[in-house]
Image (cartoon, rainbow, N blue to C red; front, side, top):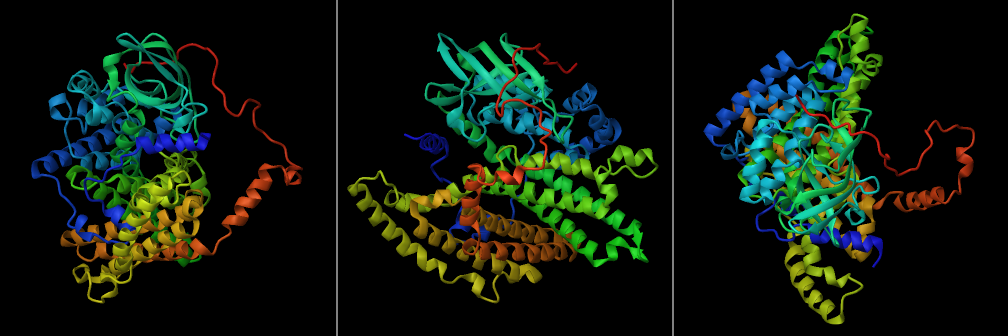
Length: 620
């Protein structure tokens, strides 16, 4: 079996195969616009909402009084007293149940907290989210035993920091290459290996470690001060300078067998399932970034005058301000809707959460890039430099740098598109997968042919016409009704396009990643449009027509993007791009590299530090 096939098989074994609950996004990719699954958006219980609002206000007061984002950026460290202050508020146990010492708040308020913190200090938001979204609390909530929950969750809620350790120097999104091992030795496992980019790893008290147990991967809770664990160095990045991210080595580290999470071999399933809701922290911080950008764009757009009027009144800048404001509204709507669905638990949100992460991280970066452009030279200048020469220290360039990682961690945008595609085509593979499987037997192909015939005989006619063709549909949304009709029509067009792609490329479709990426990006636009319209309808009760104006402009912009993506499905340079890339890799164009000098520091492309003292530190 090839390395690619092994990785693919391992991924298939890890993913959730059953759909026991409905999924709005899954149906959207099938051309079935189930607005009833998201409207009205679920609302938290009154008591939980009251506690959530009070907590968000308390965090806001604490940030305003005790946190200096400029200091964190300058010193590249979150002060210990800030960590302890947030722990005292309960910010490290927002979604941990009250029976385990946490606040037990809905995801909605966890995300609103991260939106607030992320708008003020993204590094601090990363500390909180890495601890709760992918650190010890979430895996134990989903897969831990009662004994594990009672042992570790109260510690996490009190502020003992946790970290998630999966990535290795030679392992990114390909878990088949994982080399860290866990070997059973009586009542213990012995861990050996090196983990890279361990966010919170330098200051963590508890670790979730993914290690190979035989041919499969398992997950363990590990005490960070266990003998044999060495934090070899702290990494530095272009942004998020305050995060404590390191390289962690395990050398004959003995871990009690009772610290195994779930069963042996469930590690990747635990990681993927954890991220179904854990990924919601990123859309929250992205929405916070975008909402902050609206404030700065408005104030600067009015204050800066060029050629006789404020720059915001010039069309070239006005279109950027419009994009920033409309997108900020949509990102908050996407985050709000998805977190409410996570709380409600009536829907399977694995695709929605992935779409929210992908869309928010891409769009928020564009928003911040446009903000830097609007600010001109001041956008490129650091806040500290601006303040030193007597101007308002707006950290636009820092926010842009900080947000760049959102398109990479917890699944890069490219990997997210592939994960979403796999879930989106699940119904097709269930019906006809063996027809395109070269290893399938004739009998299996015959059975698949019968299943496929029955499935497509029912499904394909539903893509011809729908409520989006009726001019009176969705009238309750007023000026937004025509956008929802567009979403319904376009979801059917999207499903037809995916079917055409499957028919054309069959088993080779999984390698047509540019095509599949555009399919996913169209689905993300449709999901965001739906969320914005649902949110505007709800907001209008208190805010009148203003939410409709924001949602209408966003939907107009989103439709243009979706239409452009459709045009590129079949008219593109993908084949030429792949061919040219192969030539580049083969060295055909070496002459292009002449006349330059490479400032890179010499060293291997993939490596790990050797030895060195343990730089782990405790928050005191």
